[in-house]
Length: 168
Image (cartoon, rainbow, N blue to C red):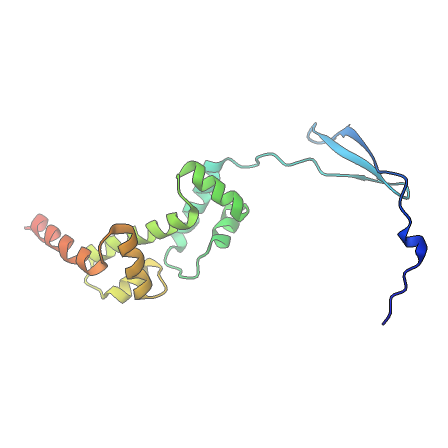
């Protein structure tokens, strides 16, 4: 199928769009109005301000995270949807409130849950990894070592002795 272009369509447009400012009826903000060629008048929406405070966004994300921490398919888009913001807004909010990225916060929350499970139960490491929200045990061990500096087995052995001494 051939497309035929007529020379008239290449002609330069000599009438520039006219921009004026008019107050917005609802918010009192000034929005941009412009006349488009052909006499059609369009109004742009006003630029959105900060609709939600960062601590509210982080609070919503943390509430969702507490309920869905064991889900290995949890991702940043799920957290952002739960907080009703975009992924970039979620990242900015976490950095301003918690001084860390959202995903690093998810990983540290999972490691904290895994620490509790390692000390309080005698379940295998693979089961603890799944309960903490990791996809598999090698990923759990690697992440645990990166964050705590020790492996989950070593952590369990050192802290199991402390728990037995406290009980005795």
